[in-house]
Length: 499
Image 1 (tube, rainbow, N blue to C red):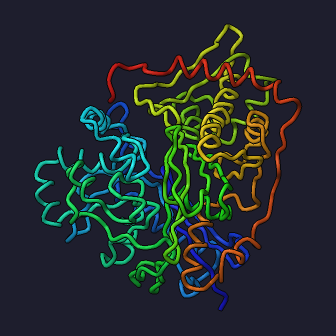
Image 2: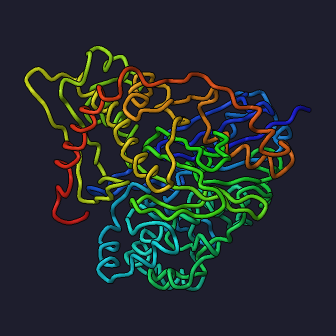
Image 3: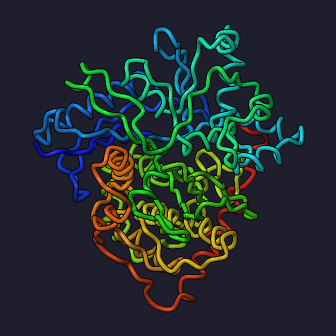
């Protein structure tokens, strides 16, 4: 029988499953959305059981859509929303609370206290991260400090922590595997990215018991097998990477200096820096991209919290559009933004600002402003935020990018990609297979079981859908970016204390 690789792509708003063949093309897929929970301003939660049930349903439906049996799946790879934090009971496997989503600012006060204690340099040196509520470690501390009776259970090892990859591995294996990979571990504030180990000093500073933590194994190896009754047979669980690192791998950014940007719920720009971590002077993140065969590859990353989520806000919050895909046609109904700028700091600002107190801002409105101008401002904001990050990244790495690989749902928007090429300026390259996050997870799993032989084998699958080149003189576009920076200044420090 022909063999294939199944990728589970567990995202912020939906759980997807995509099956890939040897040519890197999808032969079947399924997607299940699940609810977003907003218990208070600035706080975002998910129900872990919804994550599990939607992911399992998507996996089963992807097999049906491809008309395949589980015996034809050579391996399963997992990619996931990264910093989202889940705690569950070791015995029952049931979550002890809702998951705290990466977007949530609920632990911002903890971060501020740690900063005032003067320990941020310790975290920065060991983890490559800044002290921000974005990351998992302060979310764990928040739950241990606020859920009655949870801390003693965690200290006994009765409560386990995991990012979403670990939770899915645990469930899929019937509780036999408590594992994560270095790309996810490096997003917790608990992992020393140079030693490749959970760090005792960091655990002490955040008061997180070591007994909670998963074993860290490479991004491409067989961790175990699925429980047979979930998909019909036992299947090797063989690859894991956080979503942005997986997309970088799926884009075949294997060489130092290569970079990709994912336009998803957030916007994430990663640059491969090789086998040595590059310390950022611009408040970007130094992170682990992947680890294969004992070799660790590092990356610089700039994280924008709100990108595609702003389109969802236009759809669900304001009712401006009926479907997310409608935004491009609406924006194209006007020739420019009409002087309207939108700063999507709906959960604060990420790189390179890292301002938890910023809030979403619309400036430049006049009586002539329409919903089309707002739609265009939302699209343009994704490109402006990407340039903010890319400028900082180029300074840190000492390289000038001439091309940017792109993926994610937003990359289907031609207006966005042309504006991105103009505002950088650089060539913007969209691959034929746009779901590179899932493809990266499939590649990692397939390499582990010999489905693909090596990275050169993967490069041969890469095909370009379209390249967008800068149009006209770059100086024509600079005034728009200058106005964007003014708008960002208006959004900064809007609230007096973190929430």
